[in-house]
Image 1 (tube, one colour):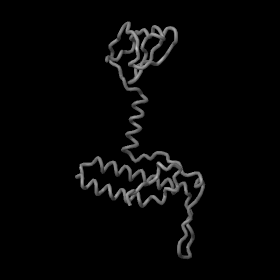
Image 2 (tube, one colour; image 1 turned 120 degrees about the vertical axis):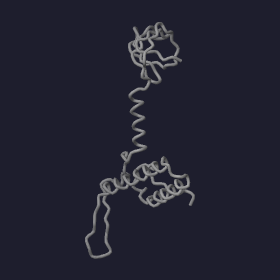
Image 3 (tube, one colour; image 1 turned 60 degrees about the horizontal axis):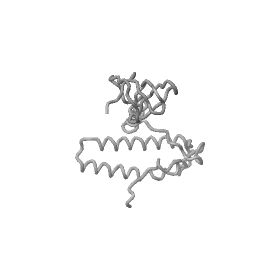
Image 4 (spheres, rainbow, N blue to C red; image 1 turned 60 degrees about the vertical axis):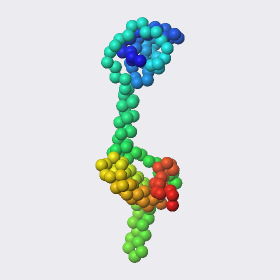
Amino acid sequence: MNILGIGSRIKHPELGLGVVTNVTSKQYWVTFIEDGLETIAIDSEFEIIEAVEDEVDSVSFRDVEKSLKNLLQKWSDVSQIVPIADKWKGGKIILEPGTATANKEVPIDTFFHKITMVRDRVRVMEQKINASNLEESEKIDMQQYITRIYGSLTTFNVLFKNSNDYFVGDKSK
C-alpha cells in the first residue's frame, strides 16, 4: 500500500472531496470542502483523485515523544514520580538511639524519595546487566543478587501508594 503525500486529492464516500494536509503513521489529516479538517484511517475507503508521491514522515511527533520517553525510562536513572501513600504525607521518621544522645528526625517524604531513588537505580543496574556482554551464568548470578536486594527492601512497600510500585523479591520462598 502506497502512502499518499501531502497535497493528494481524494473523494471520501461520506465526507466528499478533500486534500491531504498531514500524514501520521495511522491516519491522514484531510481538509474537506464541506466538513473542514477531519482525520481518517490510512486504510479507510476513498477514491484517489490525484496522488502526490512525496517523501512523507509517517511517524508523528507524539510517536517520537512516546518512544523517547520509554527509552529514557528504561535506560536512564531518571526516576519517575511515585506517589507516597496518603497516610504518610507530612509525616516523619524518628531514629531513637540506644544511648543518651539526641533523636534524629527525618521528614518521611525525604526518606521516601531516597527509597524510590534506590529502587530506580537498582532497576537501571538490572537492565544494564541484562544488556551487557556477560556470560549468561554471570547474568543469572547478578540477577539473583538484585532479587535479594529487592527482597531486602520489601519492608518499605508500606510507604507506596500504588502496589505496582512495590519492591518484589523472590516469590518462590
